[in-house]
Amino acid sequence: MSEFLMPSLGADMDAATVVEWKVQPGDKIKRGDVIAEIETDKGLIDLEVFEDGLIEQLLIQPGQKVPVGTTLALIRPEGAVEVALAGPAPAVPPPPPVSPPIPERPVGVRPPLAPSRERIRVSPLARKMAEALGIDLGMVQGTGPRGAIERVDIERVVAELKTKQAGPKLEAPAPPPPVVAALPPAEPGAAKSTPTDFQTGMRRAIAAAMARANRDIPHYYLERRIELSRALRWLEAENQKRSIKDRLLPVVLLIKAVAHALSDVPELNGYWLDERHQLQEAIHIGFAISLRQGGLVTPAIHHADLKNLDELMEAMRDLITRTRSGRLRSSEMTDATITLTNLGDLGVEKVFGVIYPPQVALVGFGKITEQPWVENGMLGIRPVVTATLAGDHRATDGIRGAQFLEALNRHLQEPEKL
Image (tube, rainbow, N blue to C red; front, top):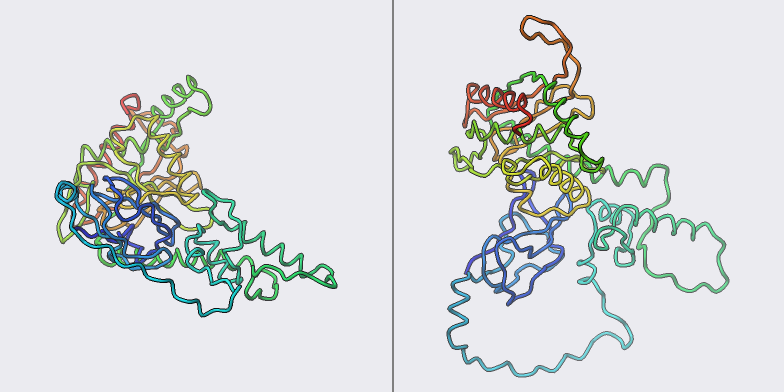
């Protein structure tokens, strides 16, 4: 029997809430199946299993918040399942029927429905808004993905309540449904404070993880300017052959060039775990994505080195869409072997990031700007991007980092080979 534990989906995650089980005891499962949905500070995440077998027992009820490392379920491995199915079934007599207990509540009084309410799909921001305003989530109609309750749904309920409170009272009003337990008096800016509370919670978790990373990881930083005239000319010519929806963005060239450079300098593709450097064969690039309500998530683009530019473009679009709607898979949150952050679209020229443990490197790109450039003794104006590298000195050194940046530059000078 193996234990399925609450995984750590990042250095800034200490606990999570089980929202819903996708399986029941006795169900067969295989590696990669989504067996549960959990909620973290960064949203709702589909939890995958990493072995074949059979669900023996679910140990955590939906709605329970448990720390990382807690046993969520017991799984009978695939080999044990086959043995159990082949062998005779144990002769265990069925338990005698038990008469239902006589209810102690008065006739006609419905018991509380807390268990069902715990299964409600709700975004972290909407949950915090509901708690702050006293909104009963069981009476809110969700309009998000898969019926999830989002911020706009809570704001709609609050607006309806204020309208009812401001309107004339009827002589014989019907009792309203218990939507609000205690609606605080309306104050200017009160509704705006709740998103800030959510942002503060996420930023507090991120800040704690980055503080540990700054403390524990001996960072070194390198930067290099890379001339992009060849890459951008090739990209412009390539996009002229395509429809608008199929065109490539410059960031896709950067992602593919990073993947190729990691193949050339594999020491930067891996983890620092158990006090040793553990290289990884697969290249999974964590792509930093900002959330609309604030905060940052870095899900992984799996096997970036094996994808062509069209596949990378599709993978990036899909990740951005699912990240901002709270529909990521746990493997996308845990598999990244290096992180790439790009703030060029916001006008930032240089990015010096903090390594996200247990990774050993982070690559940053700034804005592509027109800069003076000397080549073959001739001065001209060229499009240039500044690439930066944050490296873990326990795993690599400046020589390896410089070799990586040189490989990155070399691949961007040959865009047709990306």
